[in-house]
Length: 268
Length: 50
Image (spheres, rainbow over the protein chains, first blue to last red):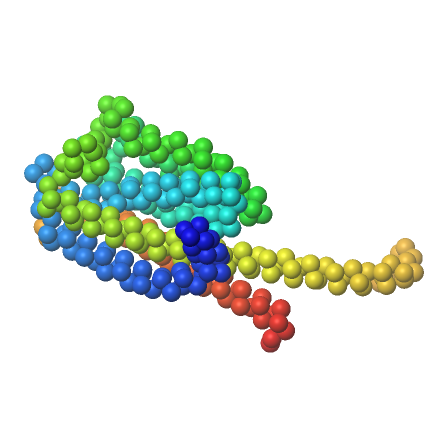
């Protein structure tokens, strides 16, 4: 039953129908949640006893980091879907996710850097967590470049899937870098053994922002997938149009071939 | 909202995030609209509509 439901939802035609109906609701809900999250961040959350007001940067930095990694995780699953099952929506999903994941990773890097200057005294250190996050951003850039280099979408999808799977090794490195190496970046404070180390007055607004940004990311992803499906339909129609024009030219060609060749040097 | 000498770092973070996400939303919307228009034109050509 689940397989049948999944196949039905993932069929491009069905996908366009249900995503078209869901998008306005998702966009409105994510806008409301982002507005509530920003209100909590700036008016409800108390300053941290050590970080002061710079703790407010965490309310955009942490969700961006989670989504930067989350989108790459989703792309890895899509890569498996492309290579193993050759699912028509898998590479569409992968292609649509790359720029969104790259944008969230970039936000994470820049906001982390802006937090680091007043707290660590520097914008950047070659710390394991920071460096592995930068590597993730560079992998995203490589994937986007590869998509643009190969014109045929199915060939591009296979090449990108292999690169995505190779790059997935970076995800556990990012997650556990703060445990494996002695880093300037603080260890995990939300998902850790023994529960979160953040006070509830700061934790719940942070979780609200994570939810809001996740919903925004999902909305952008669905919209980008719809555009990608339309782009592929346009490409198919353009190829058919070119084939029709080519066939028409071939029908005319025997007449010109049968005509007497023009003598050299004569004006046409 | 008084963030003292941290204000520029906080404003810079949220400003940059707003800029990137705004660009992502705008680009997605414009790209979607352009592809839909192109598809409609091609389908009209195929069906021989003016």
